[in-house]
Image (cartoon, rainbow, N blue to C red):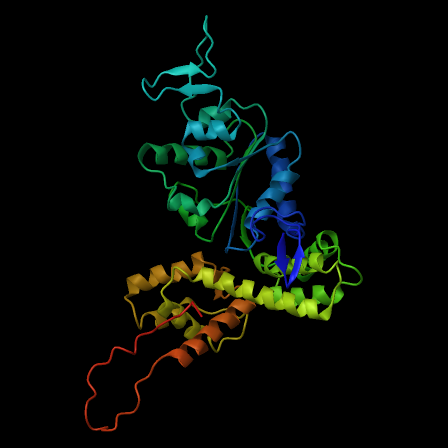
Length: 409
């Protein structure tokens, strides 16, 4: 048993990690789903395939969208979730396809034998030499789904021969040259396409390159209502709660989860009653979850750099675009031009800054406000030396003027 707001209860409905993975209440992204459905139909008709890529900041709902796209794929598509290694490692791909038990490779001799060896005459089946050969022998349409794909430029980066194999496989799939319908569905942070360009994946087909942003109002409200009424078993009209959560979540999937999770806990602990007091407590907890998300986004970035970003956008109206040079000029006060480029890219990777082809912006209104509040808090906490009683005399060097960005408040 656990407690919530002083009341004992059983754990509420919902996934273990509430703001990650597939969701039972998927709404929105209709245009993306329609375009992908058309792609699968064309792949079947032409007996070809290609690559479909989705990029977005952390918390934009990429993983949930991938699962929805996979579950919506009609028969006879075989949906296979893969790790990056499957693009160059035959063994990884065989396991992803459910064929990992067919072959057993001896670590001692490097020889090949059938798994589950039985005494007697055995016909040896050779291990297929590379992932291309594995897919070429497949006789059904194949949808390969790769999440967190930006890691192919980081911890899962192929080198040497592996890079060559991955490049060849990607080229064949991307150009529809596998001899059968094969589609590679990729999702990752906004650096994903750049990561795959190093493997020869450059020009993405029309309608196959998606930048994932916030949900519209209709979809946001539908998600909130589904959670409150179906899982929270809310009694009566939930409009007031839906209005409040929609207004504060800004259509951002992670934020919706930040408010819905405590809402479900409250409703379960209070038999579904939608009280004003309950809503106040849920909004308070949701705001804390939202702030925690922002703190996670900047955790790997120097505090002083975050402050410089906040200074650059402080007078900018929420949601307005800005030019890259506005941020760069602030960062150059502390760093070299080369280092500034890396910092700016980090802001994009972490979803703090978004690019839409016409400029840059802070993608979530409440994140914009949070950055401004952090700057004000920083200025309040920043120690300044008291005025010198002897203004004509030098006070010497002081070590208290450095920029400090305190996340543990």
